[in-house]
Image 1 (cartoon, rainbow, N blue to C red):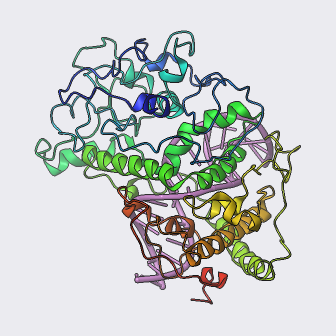
Image 2: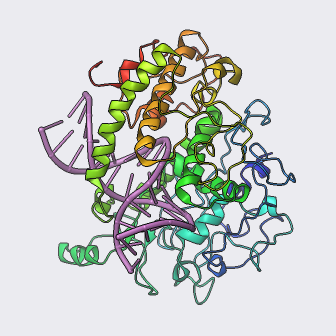
Image 3: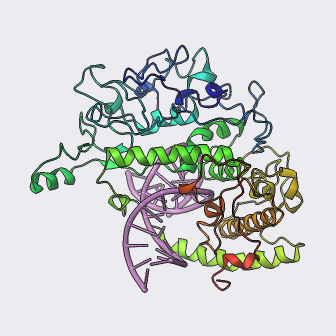
Length: 442
DNA sequence: CGTCCTTTGAAGTGG
DNA sequence: CCACTTCAAAGGACG
């Protein structure tokens, strides 16, 4: 099960640092530099199943089925020490310098941490060869000069942190000095290095990790390729995940951040501020709109009859082109409120409150998102008051910013108690009116 | 070519 | 402390 679920997160269980290129037995035997994989050609194909929980292996990809039934997903995957970051193969400088806090193994110097089979993705055991996060990782987070050293195996070239994005195709740059002790340099030198220091990207959060893993799957099952639409689906699938499943990604993201901070102790997200184009004004505008429509949604939900900004979507409708599925592509067999409700709670419990969302047009999107949040809160509160949140981490007891509400309601991911068990009684959010989400209510 | 779209989450800024 | 903003991935769409 573990192999199927997280095939490439597997690494040698030995505590000895050795070649992680061949992490596991047979299923990662092909050693092809990841860079040889064309960026535009995603290695994953519909034939590749890496998550039996979410997709039936072998079944033709006919429908996108965001419905995820954790109950049928098999045994909850226990924490595995080998769940380490595939995204941060330590650089040569890091090897031997940074004892990985989690006991992760580091790749051999100058070696790609992960490899792809030749000729695209024809691994004899595709399901075990690589998951989406791996593939997307290698295709997007490694630049050729990083992972394809002229002399693989030589300690000279290494594997910089995948978060590093160097626009200049050069043999360098290596990741910033990894050990504070090693970086005893003059301020001038430091400044100089900082000027040309590579762009270190933010570590991926739980949802981003999830997207990386699942995107190919969704794309394979849909005809659409537009990321915006895919992301909408993924967002819904994310909500459909069980608490336990999400916890895996939260934990993974936590490890990512931990490793990232170790690799780049001086890095700050601030470093990347302003490096992307800002679209502040529009965001503010739409935010205002969403706030307005949250209130509308409140009323609608309060009356429990009308659903403005909400379009019901045919449950069985497979995801198709955005145009043809206008207003329907995002639906899933699972009712959103089932997803919105406590994942651990029986999905049917709140399914009658389904408020499927169709994030189609721009103005509506925000509103629907807001409504989504509102419905989420509603479902959460309902679940809470009905005593079905016992297995959930503590929920916040105060209103939350709209943007962070779902997260917070999901129980403060950063403090997500991975070891939480169903028998543990936890304080839960008291059932509150939907107006909680608004400032005025606050 | 650069930016937008779209998602969630983390971390930043500013009041 | 709170609200808001930015960026992380992705790739088609668009100016």
